[in-house]
Every structure is written in structure tokens, then in C-alpha cells.
Length: 331
Ligand code: HH2
Image 1: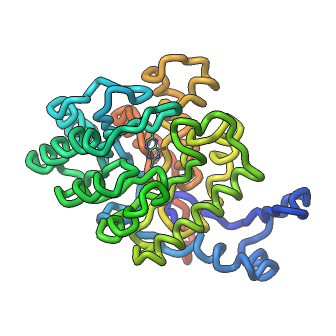
Image 2: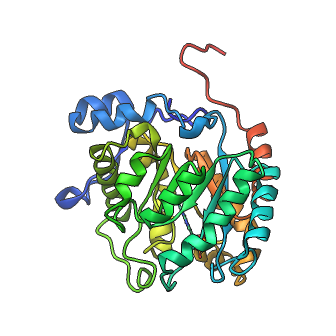
């Protein structure tokens, strides 16, 4: 099975277009594959063995710690926008149990003003260099939409190109991603400045699925092997509360794309709206609740600000969640 801690024995058949109103059918996976041959490959991918890039372990959910080297990020802007504090923060997150640290120099919060390339480079490169010099014990991810920023970060030793535009923002990005050990393709509708103005979908779950499917195909056509690709439905990026909830409820659908699933719910606006907590940095409890529902549905990597709290929650969750039996197990 694709995710060692979550098993999928049945398949819900979703329809779009003229058939969208048909009642949802829930069928055993084999029966669904026989009845809908056009979906057989996707159904097969759900159970195909998954590997994670960067030699990351596949047997447990992983935590990606967020390091925003920005003055204006929505929940921690200005807290570590100098290299020294940012390096210290990233090392603290690794010490607290982060499996990856994600370094970003441009806020992509709704309404954010784009950052010029030179400015973004000046923010992130000293941090990555400092982390490599300090022997950072976990892989470093670069959170950027710009090919030049990713290229310089990778040259210094970053391993994951985390592109919230899924290689659509910068035409040079696919060429850079080809050389990266790992790539995250995230769905966003519109750009950060305007994305929350009036997001619209025919069917948000299926539209995001189709987008990611098309971006994986484009990445493969550009010479990036599927084994290096991680996917992310992009919670909060051009999405209303209902869109975010529909994606979180429908998360298992993305298993059929055959790539590890990364999810960023940490401290986001919808957590504040649901819980009535206005201050983003105080949304840790709601963030963990959302994160645990996501891992239960097979999310592999959680992108979070509150690493220690998330790691604590995952340790307890793992202890009480039995791994599903392997095929052939009789116990
Ligand atoms: N969310 C943010 C930034 N990068 N990358 C991925 N793959 N998935 C996400 O959900 C995601 C992301 C936004 O969070 P943050 O970096 O804390 O805020 P800001 O963009 O304001 O710096």
C-alpha cells in the first residue's frame, strides 16, 4: 500500500460534468478498476509502493519546519528575517524533530507584494550557506517561485525545490528542477496578490486533482522523474473555507497520483475562522487537529511552524494507531 499507516480497500467513484449529480458509489477497489477501466491506473497507483526523495523514511509521517526569512510572513514575519536568527531557528527546528527545514524569502500570504529576485537571494542564500556550514542534520528545502533563487540555493546544498506555483511562475524553473533531488508541485489559483479575491472552481477537489496530474505530466515531460516529485493541494492558496475543507475531506483522492503528499495547514486563516483565534501564532492547537486528520488520510509530510508541538502530537498518534496489516498477515 502507498502509505504504511493508512489502508484503502474501497474506492469512492466521483463524477464530473453531466454525471456530477450521480450518487457517490463506494466499491471494492478491484470492482471499481474492472467497472471503470479508465481509472484502473489511478486505482493501481494508490496501492503501489511509494518512496520518498532525499532518502527520507517512508514509515511515518514527516515534519517540515517553516523558516520564513521575511519581514511580512502572515504568522511569523520579522521574527527571523536576519541570517543569524534564521539559522538558529532552523537548527532549533531540526533539534525539535523536523525532518526537513523549508527556507523562504518571499511571503506568499494573500495580498503579499512580490519580492525582487536580488532581495530574495540576499535573504535566503546566507541562511542556506550558514546551515550547510553548521552541518544541518536534515535536508534543506527552498520555498521559492523563482528559478534563479532555486538554482543558487540548490548549488549551495538545498535539496528540495518547493515551488508554490508548480513550475508555472518562471519558465526557467523546470530546467532548474531537473537538477534538484526533489521537487514539490503545489496547487494555487491565481497569484498571492489577488488569489483570495473570488476563488472559483467547478469542483475544487477534481479541479485541483486535474491540475496536479497535469503538472506531474509536465514535469515528467521536462525530464523530472516522478520518484522525485511531491505534491501539495495548496491549502489557502486561492481557496475559500469551503474549498479548504473539501480538499481536506477528499485528501485520499490525491493518493492515486502516486506521489507523496505534502500539506501546509499550519496557522492558516481557516483555522482562525473555525476556532475564533485571531492571532495566527496562537493557532497551534487547531493546526495540529487539522494535521492529524490529514495524516490519518495518508499525508506524508506536514509543513508546520510549531515543530515541537506537532512532533509531540504525532508521537502519541503513532503509538495508538496500529499500522494496517501487510498483505499475507493473519494476525
Ligand atoms: N504555505 C505557505 C508557503 N509555502 N509551500 C507548500 N508546499 N505548501 C504550503 O501550504 C505553503 C508553502 C504559506 O505559509 P508561510 O510560509 O508561513 O507564510 P508566508 O507565505 O506568509 O511566508
